[in-house]
Image (cartoon, rainbow, N blue to C red):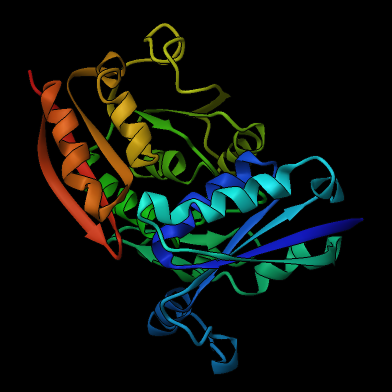
Length: 313
């Protein structure tokens, strides 16, 4: 089958927004490539990294989305072009767009040649499902095949969440993951000792990938469902109250949800909020403070920040 590969080259700070827009427009797969990921893999000793494979511009990232040819006729390409042209208006770097024809074999499997195991924190290692996880003694192995869903653990926003999650779980908690993507955060919570884990995402492909990844890890205490993050969802009748909420979203969405998430928290519950551009961390923290949360920790990596928030008793 013929596919269209849309390659967007931009600065790292813009990659989350571009990748999310591609998913919203119906991409059947999204991948990200940047020099920092290759350098991290080299320093971590994750196999031989050939210099010619490493992007030369360390201040650029390439986001590739794969679409059916109907993209050319139904207006989605024009919508993406308009979106990219407006990035500077939101304080993000400008982007360039390229279009290529590819076939099934090219996009479905070639990226697997480059994705390597990713140690996170002191406990976890994220291992591609097609590799051997037994070579990581002393770490909890999270097997993952993201497929077309977004989330491999390489992105700073996900890594920040995982590092904070590792610190927060003592065992036996109920955890809710809002916007579960590939299921990586929810599955990590279960592996780290949470008793019950619930994940939601508006995209059917994400829910399907999350369920498949939970099965890969032989987890029976993780439940995923498709739903929007709206008022109907944010009730304990639909989603049980949790000790910990995982919200790797965007600054704007966190601002919208800041006054509602208490409905999903137990007394004294906590939120790990990520996907926040560093320059907007104070704005998001202030919005949560205004509705009764205290900031326990702020953690940053690259251009991104995650917040650990606690609902005041």
